View (cartoon, rainbow, N blue to C red):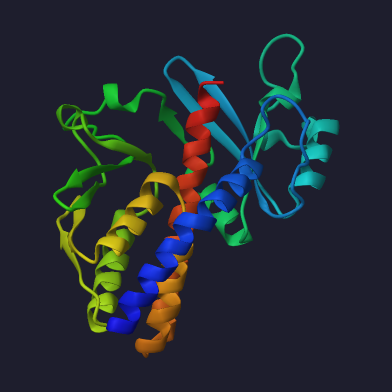
Length: 271
């Protein structure tokens, strides 16, 4: 346990000094086009998408790409060949480049996951003004709770003040199962992380402060920190069921990707 705590603290300090600068630089390359082509479009996998807005609502039209640069150029040249993106709808002359956005991912499976969750779905632009008991909305929400934090899978209108809207991050039953499993893994490895679960929410109240902070960062910013990655490497040395551990790691990685995508979508809505 002492070795694990020491290494976690060391990697956390390294993250503070070095990784935040690298993350800031790499994050900018992931963001969608800002109505121009003045920077290099990545050649890796990702999502190419179009946001259609109407009165109080928006719809995401998405396309899974294995090479964003190639597909982006092809779509600009022949948008009619990609009817699912709905780029030619609307009256008058259409500026396709102003409608087209992209989001890059490291793992092509993340692009498929994002597409499956949000493609062709309608979302209210100001969701928090519509939430009520009978229609609690689609987003997950984060709030501070003591030394930890709480994740709520839906809210009534009267509850949302003081919460951070995270967006539609996936199936709540899967989330509950994965975080219960993570808590168990940490406890078996000598690290404390207490999870309290209810039907529509869960909280991480007590435990290693560094771990709670890194998980909060994942939800708030969509970042898998170097500290969290090193923690899982340490857990692999102490937890025998590597398949189960990898499953939890892949889930957190997908969750971070979905959250970062939704941050970008919210930014795009107000361009």
